[in-house]
Image (tube, rainbow, N blue to C red; front, side, top):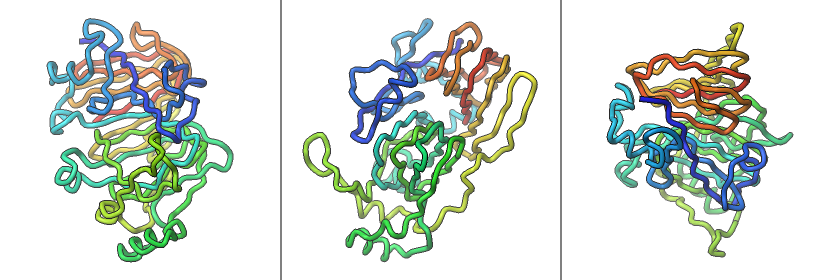
Length: 315
């Protein structure tokens, strides 16, 4: 058992930019790097292992042959439970919504999608769409989509570095241009587009919308959660920690390492470590901004040293 360093999978969606290449140093033949899938066992983009005896294998293969790597909590899920991304929005993403588990399993044969966004950086004045600015009925939602006025009812939020958005399944949302974020989500790639600014896809045709499915699953209400991390910043001599969010799907924490930090991968869950800034080591592995590590459950204590920021996720 050892700490697995993961090779990311990149997506070149039309709204993407170049920050993942320019600021994170990722290499890819793609012109745009809209998303980096940093922890993924999804069929649409599976990580491979960079180091050790499993080098070259997919994380899916490794977990399937070593189910204890998931831990007690991870084994409760029918599929690998989470997917973690870095997202660089040079342009606005489509206005969209994700279904819950019941609807998605029945209609799409995969999990629904609850997710959270941690804002890593953003342009001045950047904003996103987060729910509605008032309660509306599904009938009004449908009518406003048809007459192209529904943007009058959405909740637009100015963002800043360090904001945390919890996007429960059924929440209308859209990442705005000029935002770089980390996304921790259920292991699903089901998205229902409501509005896409009339853009054309790579084939020269308007991208598909999924209006009826969106109407079926959207909660037409304002958001109820704060955009602040759930926990207070806790300072120690060698590091600081802050709980970003916690739910029955994932537990996400930011750790700023000034010298050394000891974490634990116990029998309950594997641990994902995503480096969002700086350089250092995890055990004897050199790590830098953009690296993603999978620590199997039951690994025990692991040590991160250096000067860096990481997002630590468990299930």
